[in-house]
Image 1 (cartoon, rainbow, N blue to C red):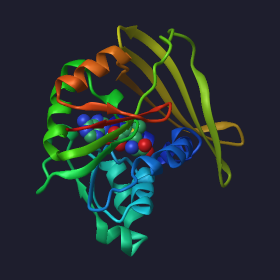
Image 2 (tube, rainbow, N blue to C red):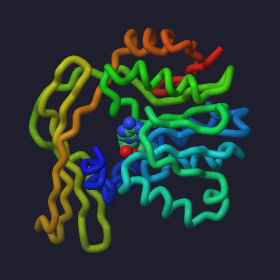
Image 3 (cartoon, helix red, strand yellow):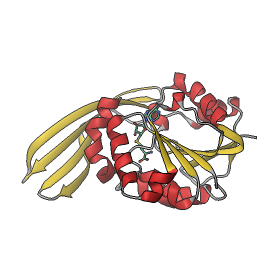
Image 4 (cartoon, protein in one colour):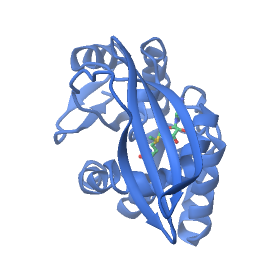
Length: 236
Ligand SMILES: C[S@@+](CC[C@H](N)C(=O)[O-])C[C@H]1O[C@@H](n2cnc3c(N)ncnc32)[C@H](O)[C@@H]1O
């Protein structure tokens, strides 16, 4: 996993500033209303969403990020802002190993759920429930997706960086139930000529609503109102 994310790191902010992050900047703030003291962010990546949480709440933030490359950008982002440096603790572990001193008011997990295979999710919800205080909220993004079909490699994003063009291409290779295996190719071009190319094969997991609801209810969560594309679940 770490290796796949390392390849993606130089492309990450370019691609995701053009993807889910602008929408999250719109949808997340109202869901954090009233959060004052503490937040865990699962899979903080390069810190794009960490910054949103820090802007929208005065809370202390535990940013959980297992991949070294992503975490390096995250810490460098914190280093540019003394206020972020003071409030954000970066935990270099996966979500299943997260353990903070006191339960938090909110857990935020943006574009990370797909990293967990079905057989790990019951444990994920149990661990997160343990880290949340009573009445605490778990906020994540999720939407029902059409079943993808294996196909050809297609360019998904292309960005100018000085004299170079950074290009991300993707291709669905295989679909097995909720698991989708895709190939991603990360290219840098100069005047159209490829000067660097890496590829990663990644399997993501996209649970259907019924399954997600029964897993979260089994872990003791109840569903709260949330806008399309977002989920808020609370502990009683
Ligand atoms: C698509 S990125 C999303 C990053 C960030 N939340 C954002 O929206 O910009 C997924 C992140 O989840 C992290 N991740 C993958 N498996 C994880 C796990 N088991 N526990 C915590 N984070 C994980 C990856 O390292 C990566 O940084």
